[in-house]
Image 1 (cartoon, rainbow over the protein chains, first blue to last red):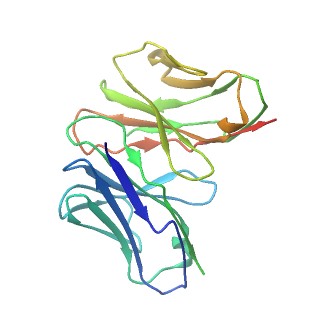
Image 2: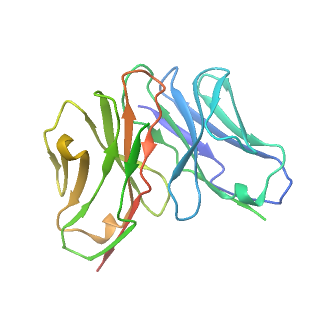
Length: 113
Length: 116
């Protein structure tokens, strides 16, 4: 069966510090991968998606970047965090070439102080 | 452009009441897919159902049921005899087309509070 792992679960970081959130998927190959952010009490905002290694599409220009160094690994990064980067970050995967549902990780709650 | 609207931002019911969460969508595609997800307090989004645009049959799964009506562009979700464990934020989502990599468009979510 397929599983998705996302870590860390919670993170408190000072303004101006770097960020690295990691997401890995097991039990499947060549998945589509996504990063979403959810601000407190609000809906989901798509940040990045990837259909293959090294292929990243950004939906919203901001202080974040994403990379996919391996087929089942998706990393969300920032060189210098802003207060506005606080939120709940969710990674998701889905099978390619089929319009199936996306499966989400458990999320990372990031607080920038 | 596609859009999903969940007009109810918050609903509060007493346990055992039935509750319907509304979802209205907009798309120009003839082929599309609709989804419902549940986000419990733990934060993870849990997939509930997927429905394609060519299948208007309503579906029932235990206490959950879904009513898909293309004529009104709605995909409503009903919980029968609600329970405290149903308390969560529920998201409706839409994906258009048949190509891989088409992103999900989410509604703003409806927070359901079921009180004992």
